[in-house]
Image (cartoon, rainbow, N blue to C red; front, side, top):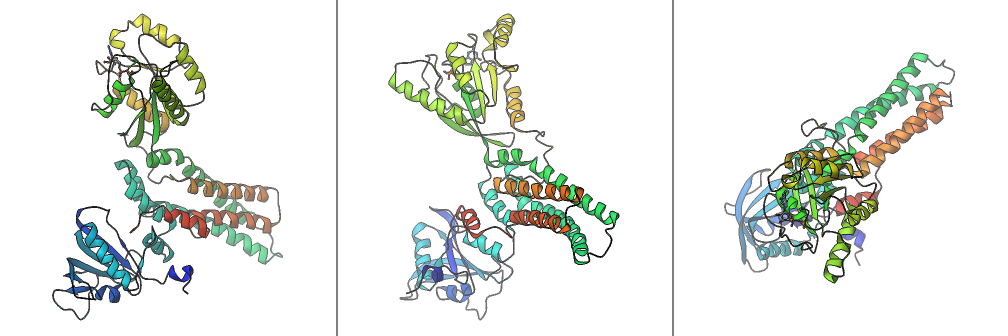
Length: 465
Ligand code: GDP
């Protein structure tokens, strides 16, 4: 019997439909592995017979069932010879018509031919294992595919081009230099320690620490740009929550009425606010009620408040009441902005009165009816999660927890090594700390990443990527 291990060997030739399911102009099947071309040739018949297929050229032909010669599709075929392909293996792509049946039939024919269905992300995993890209670039591929805004896309493209990889390589170079000096002294203990060499080493380590700090300081913004944030609009019924959602969406989706309590459920929409993907949630107004349906809506609203990255707490000319204060108390510690809506019908005196009753200092005054204050509100939302101005973001940003954790470990090891130098600890101990830091940094690139972590990263990819 053939074991699962053998079935899923790196030597297998694999195939998958690489275009999304459903109807489309074209549907692409990608094949990768040593036998990609010879196995594809069993089913692909070029219109003009070829002795050899040139790499990176398109050939018109037909897919035929080898069993009975039945034509499955007319398609284009391209062969990308190893190592000049995405996986660095021989790759064949069949550009068929984009229909479910035609693509599945073609896949079936391939699988009858000892080609295995690729696992999710297996093509990218091979590109990584074969050294074409490092792990940070592999992660960037999925970020490019899933980018929610243009800014997020730009960030992913920098990482895909090797932005993070190159910066980390520079730092590793400095640390390897420091380690080499150290090891020279370890190997020749009779040599006097040269204070200049030690100072140079100290400098290399300290500049690496500053560099890590610079990268770590970009994490929060990177995460926000990649994943987006949850912004919850809260406030009692009729203050203008649905109107705000509509204004930010710039189209009417939530139902706006003047009967308090009609937004019975939470409504969620995704908007692009200056490059940040925002999951905007309009909650049911929270108040004491006996209505069962409304109670359910209020429970949901409370749950959303507890998960929010930012709460927009709205009020109108009535200011805050006891119910509002209860809600606000229950979410203390969460980032929030107070918004006084309907300033078109509020006197300055009343507005000041409301402001002085608020638990926080900042309140934005807006009028959704008159279209006032919306731009200021958008700026305030942006500034509440971003340190940099929209056009001043650093080009290399870390956006994954995995990178942050590895860099934090590296930083700790480097700090230990500096302490060791200052305390004249044995050079061997200092060398261990620097090596550990190098290992942690190598984790970002995937060089020292455990297999189960790699499997988890690639299993998050789609089939055919
Ligand atoms: P929600 O219950 O908090 O979602 O409130 P809605 O968005 O449904 O709005 C309640 C009522 O307030 C509607 O009649 C809106 O037209 C009205 N409203 C919303 N914003 C303003 C505003 O800026 N000025 C005035 N005068 N009325 C507003």
